[in-house]
Image 1 (cartoon, rainbow, N blue to C red):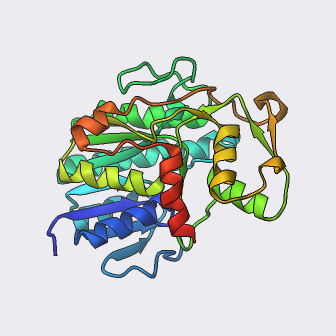
Image 2 (cartoon, rainbow, N blue to C red):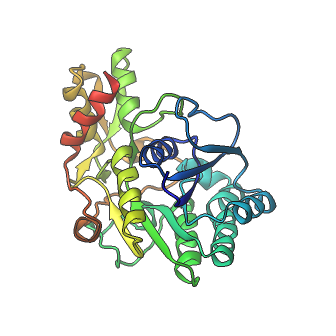
Length: 300
């Protein structure tokens, strides 16, 4: 057993379960924090705590007891429209909980890995470098930028991994991501409206988990961009999913963002330059099409 202790917050989520499974497989001492019953009960060899990330007293007490070498913060409110409508709830999870974790890192000399987002950018000038100026256009992006600033202005060892449009599959999670939505809709012969004027570089959850492992192994410090390497609009993404799974692409109808009437504004184009992660973390650069094949193998 590896004597390095890893705390993973948000362990019931898509990324959280991938992280638990990966770090357990590498024999780290894993402590998983999430709300409710453990959804990842098929994996053994780690300790699960039913705890709300916003309960600062309980989180602090647990972290003081464990004294982890690394904390990977994968807990977040990520529904962009709900964040817009409920900014206080959003801040409780995305900002205040991070402040609690930072205080614990200072006290226990823990290294923080924090998951952030492309939505800290306004989407006007891709492809984004880690050093480019943040300018969020919605409350979710603002909340994630606030948490980044708390971390970078602290004296702790930290690594911030920004990512884009995470997709993937685990046994018991809310698999409400772009790829599963397209697959499920088309399998059920449902027409879907997909925007042509928002551009992203989707990230397979396994790849993001692998980037976290690389960051831990290298004790990486700083900010890194993690995504696939090709900028596609959401409509193109949906067409690639249909092609990969041999589904009826004529059910995919192109529309403009203005037709959706969403509560929160979305940045139009948010691609990343991932060369720093490739160089410093040995992260593997790949296209969405390539990584869809890996996803397909897991689904079938």
